[in-house]
Structures are given as structure tokens and as C-alpha cells.
Length: 420
Image 1 (cartoon, rainbow, N blue to C red):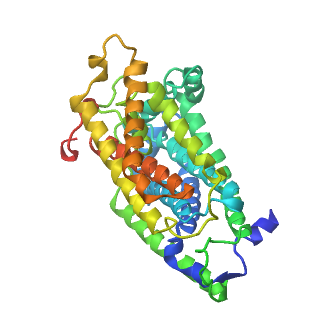
Image 2: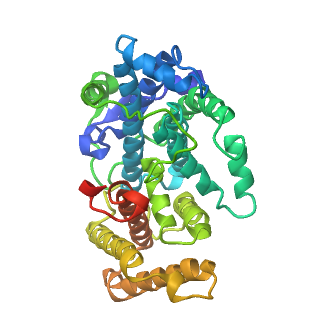
């Protein structure tokens, strides 16, 4: 462990690796936000009571009676939101610069694990205020787990400690959020940085001169310090201007309308509006996660180049895939809501087929036709083909998420944002 801690930074770095747009400082910002999360979380623990009777009142007391209590809670909330967004952007940066292959494959998996832990950290913390927003958002999210085949309902009940959210749910979420996940984050982040160091640091474009080797202090540390100051300034500004959400105390007898999952699960909830639950909650997410995990282990035609989007051809094909993903996803949402209703059109056919297999087959046919009649003209390498698939998945998920957050109103009907 001592060896890992002493070698998170090398003694010297190449001049090229200090160029800001190589990494945008995303990895360092994520690490700093983890520290902020842990520090502010420790402060909040002094006042928080993890029980349905005391949780909401302790948050109110923190807001109204504790000096800077509201500000600390705001910082904790916004640092969690920023952490998830920055970790996601870091994940995209690593992929689009090809820093996931060869000796970096295992670190890619640890990066996926870190992103998952960050999502779980936000998810477990979401319930802790025990207000209406938190209660029903977690209810919706855990109900999604119930759609898993065979063991889904048993798993859901094991997670929440019963059929509905209760005192045991709150206590277990609090323990996981405030103890287990922070410990896992710290350990895996240090190991993740160490593996980057052991892999030779930041991947640079192949064939380019690395430039002069410069001491880490002050060349790299100075830049990291500036990025950290800017990030903290933005975080403090958000903490001062925007309060963490808090509605009335949780009431299991009165559900919100609309009842939405936390924003980072809005894409999955949106899928449930268009696909059979078995596909929306299990098959599609599992397929995407499997694809993300096996990406580094596929056999490619050429070694990683280190260039953004691989090449000019790769950049153009990625843009085309993004446009296609936006068009197909929006068309699917609108057709499902206003034009097509498979359940009515195909009465007598099981919903598993009409709302599951048939829409997926249509999507696969559209993607196949698009590739055959347009993408094939790019003559892509295997790495560029994987990039096209990756871009399509990410952009489609972003569109679904934005739709679920901003365009779903009462009874989850499609509405313009200012009418939601």
C-alpha cells in the first residue's frame, strides 16, 4: 500500500501530457470531489438521525438551526451530482482516446466499477432526507429491480428490507452510503490512479514527439492546483445559490404525480415507457453493461493510436452515429406515444412479444439498414466500428434520460418542459 501511495504521481511527466485538452483534468477533479463528499458527509453525520421519525426533522434542524448547515448540505449534494457527471465524462474521455486497450484493460474494468459505485453512492444518499421526493424516487427505482426474471422481487425485498420502504431500508442505506461505499471509493481510486501510473501515465497520440520530460513539481501539481481551485469555486457558487431539494416529509399513503426515479435512472424509467419490463429493466441494461465490459478484450486490427476518435474517418462516423441515435430515439419516443400502440394493434399477442421482441427487431433492422446503406461507405476499422456502437448507445441513453427528466409530466405523459 505504501508503494501505491508513493507512486500515484511519477517523478517526471512528458511535456505533451500536460496539454489540458488531453484529459481536461477530469480524473483529478473526480478524486477531489470524492474527498469533498467524504468530508462534508462526516460533518452531516453529526446531526443526521437515520430513522423515519428523525431523518427529516434532523435535516430541517440542520437547515434552520446549524450555522452553515444548509451550505454544507448543498455542497454535499452538488459535489455528488458533479462527481457523477465528471466521472461519466472521464469515462467517455478514456474511451475516445483509446486508453482502454492492451495493458490498460483491467483499469478500464476498475473504472466501470468506480462509476457504478458512484451511482450507488448517489442512489443510497438520495433516500436519506426521507422527504416525498426521496421516498417515491427510491420506490420507483427499486420497483425496476422487481422486473428482473426469477429473482427480481426477492432481490428488491432484500434491498429494502420488506415490501415497502421502511426503517430498515433507511438504516441500511445510511450504513452503505456513509461507511461501505466511501471506503470502497478511496481504496479503488488510489489503485486506479496507481495502475494509470504503472501503464505509463496518460496515453499520448502514437507517432508524436512526447517533448521534454519535466518534473511533476511544479509543472503538473501547479496545473492540478489551478483546476482544483476553479472546481471548488464553481462548487461553492452552486452551494450558495442553489439549495439541495427538500419537499415535505415522506408520506407512504400519498404518491407524487409524476413519480420519477433519480435523474441518473431516468433513462431506464423512460425505456419502461416503450418496452416490456423484462427488456427495459433487464435485457437492454445487461446487454449494454456486458458490451462495455468486453470492449477492451475484443481483437482489433491495429494498436491504439491515442488520437481522439481514432482518426478523421472515426470522427465523422461517430458524428453520423450520434445524429442517427438522436433521430431514432426521438422518433421511437414520439411514435410510441402518439402513433403506435402495440398493445392495441396486436391484441391477443403477448406483451412480451408486442412490446419487447417486435420493437427490438424494428430497432435492429433500422440499425442494420443504416450501416449497410450509409456507414459501410466509411470503410471502418474494427475499433471504429466499436466506437460507432458505443456512440449510438451513449447518445440514445442521454436522449432517453433528458426526455425522462424534462419532458414527462403528470401521469408520465409527454409535455413541454415549461408545462411539466
